Image (cartoon, rainbow, N blue to C red; front, side, top):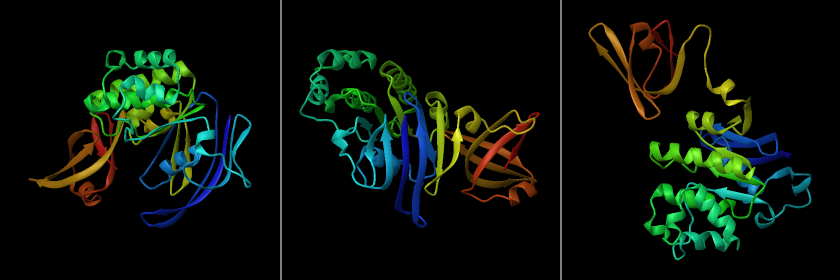
Length: 282
């Protein structure tokens, strides 16, 4: 069990805010942290890892990592951390990057096998693609068999097809090594696919906590589906209005009445939903 009770002053986009989080995470759980930019997600990861100071307590498997008297250094916490940046040693081969962390060749080769990097073990990072580098970063984070694996949007810069493949491999590694995984992500499909639980932060506080299915499937009444996106354009075509909306990697058009169009402005976060084939915007 991981018990987290921490507080920290943050400088957000709208001024100072207080990160105030009380959270319990079960061993072996895959927890996704979601929320708007500046809500404190990455800061929370860094506090767990010992990379940032905070007030409060962190206890992992009945061992104190943070309390009023002391804070364990990052090196003494059983943590694997994967950032958006790869942070690999360019002068070392793929295999050498892993063995630098721990001299366990059996484990290194097993990780390379699981992530389909075995044939690249003698290559250098500069010769790898972005997806291959991120797989190597995941392997390196697991070389010390950490109690907790922290993922800070590691797939955000990758193409959708590569992301989907790496998501499958992350889940495979999570199950194979039985780690407790905490992942920051803005991608609902990624959270739904990987996480067993999602916690939503807003202005430094937890506002939602539950299963992905409960929080991400936004259905009300007889609605058949709903998608969230950003309103890019509102244009009048004859007597109707057309809203152009970005939903993930897709751009869609929705026909609105004059009254509906008057309630929205460009840049709004909107939800497209439908009841009996009639889309509505909210």
